[in-house]
Length: 255
Image (cartoon, rainbow, N blue to C red; front, side, top):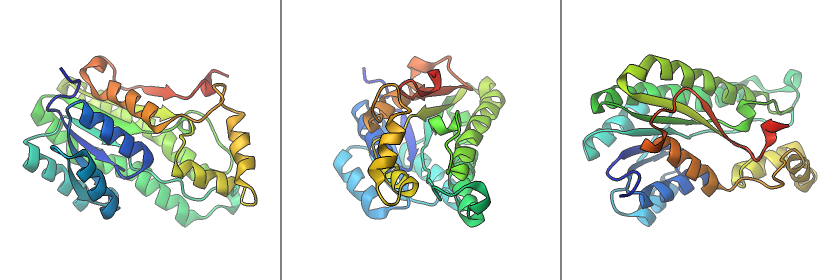
């Protein structure tokens, strides 16, 4: 029996490196996927690659209308919703100290990373209640547990997700809805490459080595490793896990 056999899963941020890895793994475990992102071409290609029950919706998680639309699309296509993976996120400005940072960039990061997760939850929760329970995973970061200078907006947004998850976990526990955050170390991805370039514009390899020096495991986490941890939280294997932050951080927070 596959671990997500016939489970209906909404995945936001599906076109990114983590999202794509999650989509492939969850499909192999029997999930019926609704892929959500703003990148139409990438979504279409991913859905075609996965095949089967995979569908997609081009949507902006920052808007009430779009989050309601993709929740309703999942119910219309598949008959209900079992899992929400609120994975959409951006980095924003990198390298500036707080007093030199751009307020508009801060607002944008909070809109996507925090409000986007909140609106996705808000849209999907009634359908999880109707289903008799389910699992929600919010993609946070090790930056949701520790500070990273030069990334105030990103760090703030990722810390905020734990508060959102814990509140929702308490409010919906009696509905058998589990809500957790997944907090990976720096991931080998396009996003991490952009962070390195922002931290060290003249030579991104300098930032790369500096970040690596903070990871006891000595490497970045692979998107597929993040996907496996997310699979655990989404599946019935994590039936008593709620309101917590799950680290895939290579030992960073053990220091």
